[in-house]
Length: 212
Image 1 (tube, rainbow, N blue to C red):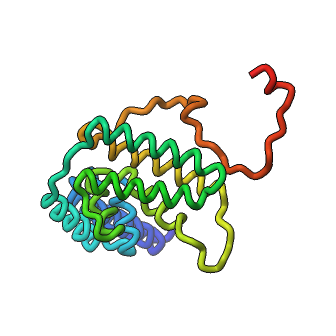
Image 2: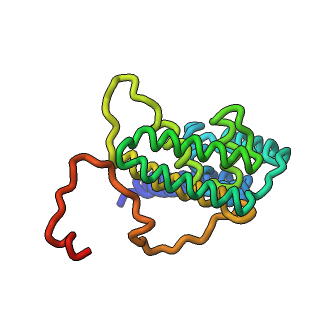
Image 3: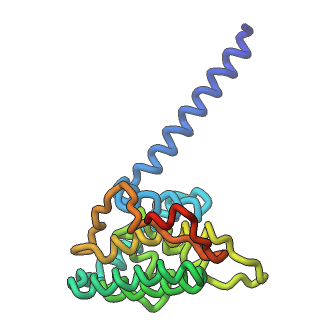
C-alpha cells in the first residue's frame, strides 16, 4: 500500500469522525428538547431541512407559548361523554369513513380546547399539544390532512383512513386521560376494541354465524 493511499484513508477517517462529533454536539445542544418532544423533534428537524438550530428555536418557542396556558383535566362526566362520542365515530366509519374522520378531528379539537389548548388555528393547536404529546401528535396532522376532500376528486384509500383513525385514538386517550396523562391501554386487542372496517358489500350470513 502506497504512502499516498494511507494518507488518503487517514484523512477520510478523520473527516468522518469530525462530522460525527459535530452532529452529536448539535443534537446535544438542547437534549431536553429531544427528550421532551420525542419523534416530534426529528420531524421538526426534517421540516427545517436538517437545520437543528432552526428546529430547536421553533420547539423552544412552542414551550414558551405552552407555559402561558392553564391546562385542566376533564371531569369524569366529560371523559365519559368524549368516550361515547369516539365510539360513535368508530360506528360511523363503517358507512361513511370520510365523515367519521371529520368527526374524529372535530372531537380531538373540542377535547383539546376543553383541556385549555388554543383553538384559534388547527396548526397552532397541534404545535402546542406536541409539547405534551410529541409521541402521538403526528396522528392529528395526518387525520387533518386525510379528512379533507381531495381536490382532484380521487377516492381516499379506506385502509389509510382506518389506520389514521386508529392512530388518532392514541392521542385522544392521552388527551382525555386523568390529568392529561395517557391512559394505560392493554396491549392485546379485544373484539370490543377492534376497529371496524368500512362497509363495502352486504354481509351474507354463513353457517358459522348461526352458532355465534
